[in-house]
Length: 610
Image (tube, rainbow, N blue to C red; front, top):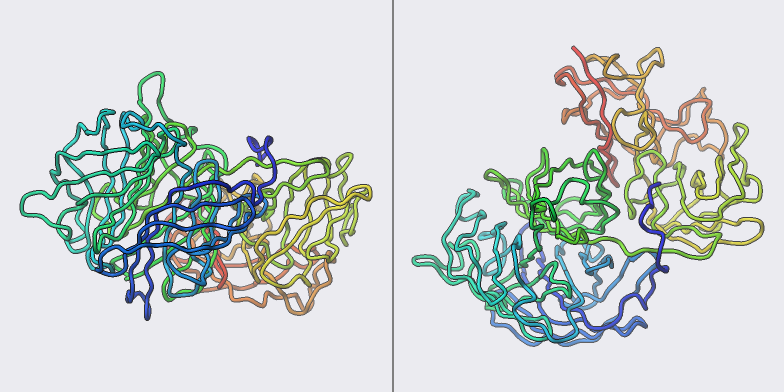
């Protein structure tokens, strides 16, 4: 059910990324905390040979110097599912952690170290024969720029431009905000704005300097090199003028009306995403790469984030959204606009809010590539935390309940008869990094199992064996902890699996009260002491307690009293977290967040009464 729409296609590999792509990248390096020591930007082409080699050509900016030639050779690897490791065009010796989707390649150098923050976006442009008519109709345009480098003059825009197909736009205003202009949402008159497309899909977009304004006082100014997608659904680009660091993204809007209107359901299926942000209030830089699963309750994100002064971590929040008829929309409780392309394949996010904000950011999302294979087959994007069902890319951890999806995984439905869980059900077994895993449910399309506590390293490779035939291997990130809270409806959303002291479920009709201690049931909290054998019942005296430090908040209020944090006695691999509801929490459905040093989850609610 979670992989609908991914039935056709092949497993991604290096041959999935071949040919010439246009790209734009902006990168900031820090010396300590968020103090920026160097800013660089680049535009040009990435030419992939299908065998793991890439040729990088274009122009680059460094600090306030004039543009210089960029030319180098690099390597890349495309793993099943569309996970890409790519030589960093702007930082020799480092790599970009990227994702290959249906329309674009996007990523960030999250693994390059604690002082590197960047965003790279690439698209496969048209073959030839492009004219200005390739850009016509309304576009939502967003930009994130760092004039002259650093963050002192950072600016963020989000506005509409309607292209006439002949190089001009109907509008003469832009909307956004700038740090040096007081973080205030404003509209400026800029015009006439224009564009010019070359036959290969490259081109320029011009934002003339308004009277009395310059690069540090105008929200967006100057000539931007741009590149347009084959179907005209989006474009990317940025300035190559000295000091003109940043990225601009344009998203083709829905026309609106009865024929071509967007709704919340227009955003559907899994998307990959990457972005970069800066908060002027906390002086925090961050860049991320991850994935998104839109649901009826909002967008569920997997955010693999590098943040200044904070270790690399994975967050799994639920972010509600609302789309207008033209595909633009806002997030509930979070700053920013989302703009979905009229083909529903690509979206951008700008942190420009409906009111003034201290958050500045730009993100691109792209539909994942379809994956398929011969049964028995494990889906490369089909390994999930069995509690939260966090989107692909969220790590697994030792001792965690996982759900694996695929084809031909068992002749029928078979469930374990009890504890201890067996290492095979029927003719189906599973290994993780070569270690047998306890299995408690198998069916033709799904395996539910437990990651062995003995699994170590930074990745976990899953292989199932069905009637003597091994499936393809699927490798996912591995972390010491990767929390996920079970929900009442078993999809990781809504009412959390939380009980009162009498074991009745906390719900709207039976809410918890401030000061009450409730039990939260979850998975992904990692190692316990004393150690417990895989798949066996947890002891009660003494109980197996979680080794990692775990924190919680309810409705944004930190939990100060944690009474128990370990395996639920008598169960197998089920973690129990007894917390006291903070006395100051408001009534109603409040978001429960569970966090460790490696990541956090905030997808379920706990009902609180007075």
